[in-house]
Structures are given as structure tokens and as C-alpha cells.
Image 1 (cartoon, helix red, strand yellow):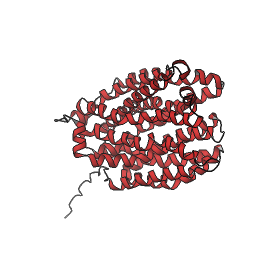
Image 2 (cartoon, one colour):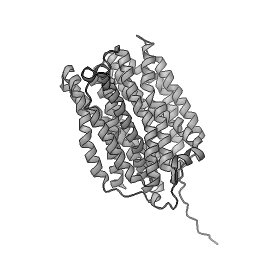
Image 3 (tube, helix red, strand yellow):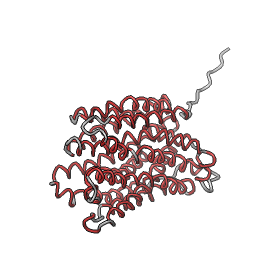
Image 4 (cartoon, one colour):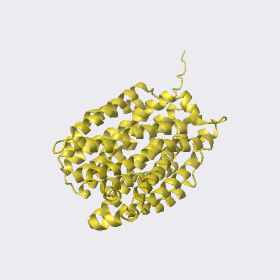
Length: 424
């Protein structure tokens, strides 16, 4: 289990590095380079629009790779998704800017972002299921939480590289070629990920199946459509929180509050470090007390914290911004630390790869794709004031997710209790 968990963590870290490095670049530099004829606000919104395309592609990727995972096994999904995401990310770093090739530049960016999302849509299902289906039931949430640490590691890698470049290069150097370096580095990481995953064995639960679904998506739509919608709605708040903190706030603080890129990246990264470190702790609580109670607690905390987070962000003070981000990400990880065990347990094994991945990635469309765009538009309407509209939007998503979690059942395996000896 430690070797399997480490390989899954490394793979998700690499793939989410690819995904996150685009979000950071969209917040900092893609607008002026690829949409120079737009106003600064419109350019940021357009860059976030290409960012959102990755989320739209993720459910399609979960259908494509979910079919492979339910028909051919979880292991092939890990290799194919890593190749697709890594290749698309390297290619983003090679796309000429608008000044060189005109409208073809943003179109190429859009196409490559779609391929990134397609690959990531398959990654989560394969990595999580391979770990969860190997894990002993009484510690399934703990072991399945290791792939969930991968996004935090990937985010830190992506933003660490961006932070180093922003601190050492001039504005002109960063805009000219510096922003491309993290995308090129994705090729090296992809090769390392393929090497790590080459020795993984197939899931025992998949190997034990006698009858594989012929068309997994058709079975999911026919028999589990309500479950898919509930899980998508339940997970929307996690995506909304994460991308409000890591993407929208970065653009808002640097463009509207005048906070330096270095300070903002440092504040966000510090909060993400704490979130990643606490992931296995929250997962252990999920093994002990159940998946659903932690999800409800995390949603409730998110609903209560969104207004304070926006207020703390608006101060522009590094320590206060860090505290606002930290509270939001602690609410996030209270839910998402157990999701990697919860979703597979909700679906039967024959359609588990498709059902769990589609529900997970539809939540990304609802919460992650729109949040930077909506939050940027709402913040623009409150120029010079605290953007309370952003807090209201995030609170509304938290309440929606709370209602969806309330309608889902508990799935934690009940430990077997040994029979007591009969005494005469």
C-alpha cells in the first residue's frame, strides 16, 4: 500500500501541476499576451474563459477514460491520461503569442487546454480507484487520500516555479519567455510519472469482476443518474473554494489591490501546504466517524467562512489574506480528504470508474469552471469596496452542496464484531 499510494500521489501531483500551471499563467500573463486587443478586465475574463474550457473537457475525459477503466482496467487509464495531459501542457509553452500569429494563438491555446482537461478527467478516476480498491476497508479513506494530496503538491510545484521566475526575472523577461518554462518542465515530470507507474498492479476488485459493463456510461445514466447529479452538486463547493483562493484571488489582488505577485503566491502556497499536510489526518477521521459527517461539517464551515475570507482578502495584508485562505482550504479538505473513498463506495464496481469520475468532474464544471469568471465580474461591480457579491456567490454554492450531501447515504464499512463466547 505505501508504494501504491506513493505512485498514485506522484502521478496526480504531476497531472495537477500541468492543470494548475495554466491557471496561474491565466491569472498573471495570458490575457495581455493572447488577448491584447481587449481591455485589461476583458483580457482577464477571456484568459479565465480558456481556463474554464479545461473543466468542460474533464467530464468528457471521465467518460472516455472511464469506459477504458471499466472495460480494460484502472491501470491503463493512468498511463494514457498522463501522456495526454503532459503532451498538451508542453505544447502550451510552445504556442506563439497573438503578436506573432494573430487569432490562431488563442485558438491553439483553447484546443490545448481542452486536451489538458480531457486527460485530467481520466486521471482522478484511475488513480483513486486503483488505490481505494487495493486498500483494506477499515483504512480505505486514509490510503485513498494520498492521491488527494497530489493536487496540493502539484499546485505547490506549479506556483513554486512561477514564484521563482517572478522573483528573478524582469517583467519583460517573464512576459517574453519566463512564463513558458513551467509548461516545458511538464515533459520531464511526465516521463518521471510514467516510470513510477510502470510497476503498478491492476486493481483486485476489477480482476474479480466476472461481467464487465458493455457500455458503462449507458448503465450510469440509466441506473445512477440521480447519484451522479447529487455527487456533482455536492462537490461543486470544493472546486469553487479552491479556485476562488488559488486563481481568482491571485488576479484580484494583483490587479485591483496592487499586491505583488510574489506576496500573493507566497500567501496562497502557505495555505495549500497546511491543507496538504492535514489531508491524511482528515481521512483518518473519515475512517473513524464516517464520510458523510465530515462532508457535512466541511460544507457548513465553508458557508460560514466565505464572507470573512473575502473581507480578509480585501485588506491586502499578507497575514490576514493567509488566514482567510487557510480557513477556506481547511473547510475544503474536511470534505475532499474523504471523497476519494466516498465516491467509489457509492458506485458498484462494474461502472465505478465511469460513475465516480463523471460525478467528480461534473462538480468541477459547476464549481471550478465558472468561479473565476463569475467572481471577477462580481468584483468589478464593487469597485473600491469589499466584493461582498463574491462572498454571497460562494456561500450559495456551499449551501447547494450541503443539501446534496444531506441526501447522500453513509458508506463507511462497518467493522465486523466478533461474537462473544457464551457462558453458562
